[in-house]
Amino acid sequence: MPATTTPDPRGLLREAGLRVTEPRVAVVTALADNPHSGADAIYAQVAAHMPTTSRQAIYNVLSDITSAGIARRIEPAGQPGLYELRVGDNHHHIVCQRCGAVTDVDCVTGHAPCLTPNTTNGFDLVEAEVTFWGVCTACKAATVPNSSIVPV
Amino acid sequence: MPATTTPDPRGLLREAGLRVTEPRVAVVTALADNPHSGADAIYAQVAAHMPTTSRQAIYNVLSDITSAGIARRIEPAGQPGLYELRVGDNHHHIVCQRCGAVTDVDCVTGHAPCLTPNTTNGFDLVEAEVTFWGVCTACKAATVPNSSIVPV
DNA sequence: GTCCTAGTTTTGACTAAGTCAAAAGAAGCG
DNA sequence: CGCTTCTTTTGACTTAGTCAAAACTAGGAC
Image (cartoon, rainbow over all chains, first blue to last red; front, side, top):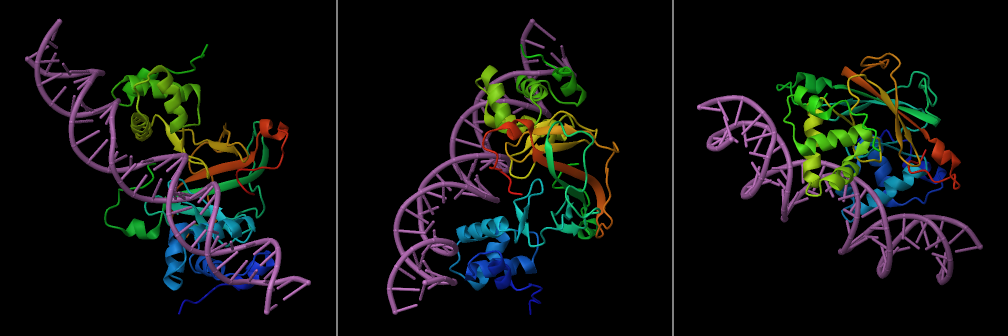
């Protein structure tokens, strides 16, 4: 009953020039079902179906598919690295300061860098990464309203 | 020779309602001299003058002055937490993808959130954090031009 | 000036997240 | 069907940071 929204993991891998193996298919599928997951969450999900999987394999696969351009790694302050399959559209994220929930936000301009600073201090600018911080619906509704994980 | 740009560490601490102790003064001074330093770099700098200092003391002080509002913690992806004394002006950062160097960029609007997404997915928006990624002058000039620490 | 007490610092063990490297195992070409 | 190269496993290790209890000290009270 997991309504696999996956656009064919095997195809994705093959197109990226990566060998199609069980762990890789499992990781891509897990990411398609649960975007913005960390290595550990993915490991848990994959290990449920494939108990022989090692945590190291997950790290390997994530790093492989990230450098192959299938996945992207984001790292909001105070959280371990999270991965998502949505790549190349230069979108951004809203992160909940209380529970860490992450959702996507479309980029206004649609191409990188979507913003430019008024002075670059001599840097060659490649990309602007925008992270919106706020409080998600669930946390707004929660009973104890004052316990942020990220001090403002 | 260290042209202490410090606006009186003792005053800063006292105004924030914190006890003025040697480790705290040393950490604030170190941060004033070297903004965007990590806990370890600060520890090295402080320990040079105060060899009895413990790494834990540095973590305590950093966390104290951060929650007192004297310092701010930033955490660019792939790097440990960095601290700076410049607070309350909602500025942003440019980070070098090769060497990790960080410099400040003034915020265009000057107040938080300086940007708003076109959909908040139900989140209450608090702040927009912008990180510009690029290549610093030194790395542009470096001999080996292709070894980023952050894959694009 | 001296004492007291809450707030600080030290010490040292511990956790989380991730990396490194060598050996065992499989994908897919010929 | 076998070979070669790429993957995965195993397990030790590193880095960044947290937790908790004991020792110490800044600064107000006397």
